[in-house]
Image (cartoon, rainbow, N blue to C red):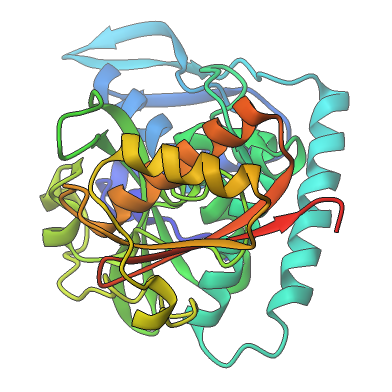
Length: 343
C-alpha cells in the first residue's frame, strides 16, 4: 500500500484534487480539473508526484490552464505531460513488477523490517548506476528497469519497493553534500523510513557512492541515521517530516570481518599518495591483500573508505588489472582483499 504522507499534510479541499489526480494519472490520463488557488493546485500536484512513484511517467512539473478567476480562486486544469510513450509505459510497468517479484522472493522469510531494508539497499548497490538526466533519471522506472538514475529516481525506487514490501517510506527533498567542503552541495533526495516502529533517515544514493566497485561485503553508510547524524551532510525542512531521534550509525560494518592487529602488522599509511604507492606495489605483485593502520586525516570512517575505494579503482585502471576488491575498516585498521579475475 502506498504511503501518502504528502496527502496527509494537505487541507481537505486539496485532497479532492489529489485523489482526482491519482485516479486520472493511474488510468493514463494527463488532465485534472481544480478549483483552488494557483499555488495550491501546484502543491497538490507535487504531493501526488512525491507520494506515488508507481506513476513514474508524470513530469516533474505541471502546467495549468486557467478558465476563470473569482476572488483569487482559479478554476482550471492541471496538465501533466507524460515523459514516456504509452508503449514505454507498459514496458516499464512490466519491468517494475518483475523486479518487485525478485525482491519479494529475496525477502521471503525475513523476520524483521530491518532485514528487508538491508536486502533492498544491497539490491540497489549491486544493480544501479548513478547518472544525472533531469528528464529521464528522476523516476523509479529508470532505476528498476534501466538500472540507472540520480538521487531522486533512486529514492523513488526505494519508496516504490518499500510501499509494496510493507515498510512505511517517505520521499524527502533538500540539499546534500560533503561535510568537509571538498565537494559542492546541491539539491538532493533521500528517504525517511519507519523500521520496526522507529523513524530513520536512509540515503541509498550516498550508500551507492560508498561502494563504487560494487564488491561485497557492501558498506551500508547512511542506513538508518538520526536527524543529528544527517545534519552534517543534509539539509531539509525538519518541521515537514517526522523527527528521527534514534540512530543505527556505526552498525554499517556489522557484516564485515574482524581485522586483527597481526593482520595489519607494523605498516602505517599516513596519506593517500602513500596509499597509492603501496597499492601499486601490491597489485603489481598480485598480492592477495593489503593491510595497514591508517593515519590519514579524515573526519569519519565513511569518507576514508570512499576515498580508498576510489583510489583503488583509479590505480587498477591505470595498471590495467582486473580484480575484485573488498574493503574492511575497523578502528583505523584497514584491509583490502583482492580477487583476481583469472583465478
